[in-house]
Length: 273
Image 1 (cartoon, rainbow, N blue to C red):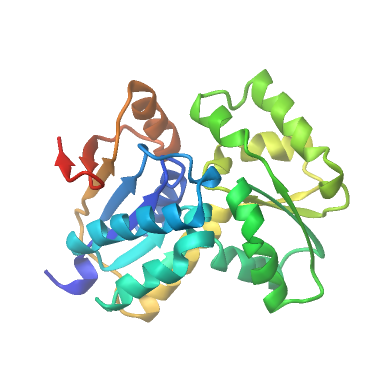
Image 2: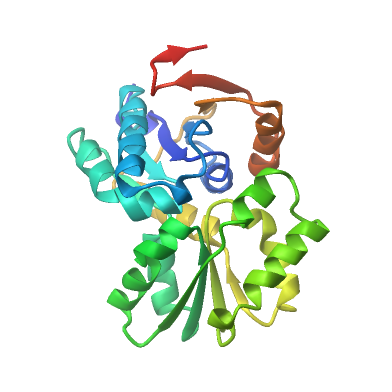
């Protein structure tokens, strides 16, 4: 198989990364995808840096063993804690690595407004990766960060567009740290499922940034530049998880937008089901 026709590997701590996979599929309809969701260990947001690195390295090796031509870290927390380690593994195979923070930071630094809010997991906020990445490119932008640990379980339990999500969102979005923002980054791949709720809360007066679109557009352009873009007519889509529950199967459809078949491959214990 030609290198350009090999699959793009995508991973996340769970199903949130499917929002990225969905946008990649839309913008790059000729690309085959292999997705791995580490549902056994989610959420990554409250785990140590060392553990996140260990999980990310094992998943990266799994994707490389499956001959992926590119790796997408579709997880803000994994990007914040394990990007260097993932790149080191992929570089050995001359495989490019894309993350969900760098393209967004670049877009925000040169396109959007001056007072940017970031809503993300505890681990992502603790790393200050958005603030560092944006201000490295444009030191004049103010970045205000807020951890929102309740949002992932609310979304995972299917309570988006519900009074529960409304209460949780109101609690976070009225926090004084976000009171002077003119744009907001939803710094978790779960959050696109509540993007309309956030926009409605702000009455569309705040720019809520569409991260999956920005990331997928960046990947599309870079693959074309590297002459790694595929033109096959019947791409394949493979979806793996480290653990599976009925709730997860329902979530996968919600995140990806269509029915998908999830296969359990526990790469951490080398158990295949």
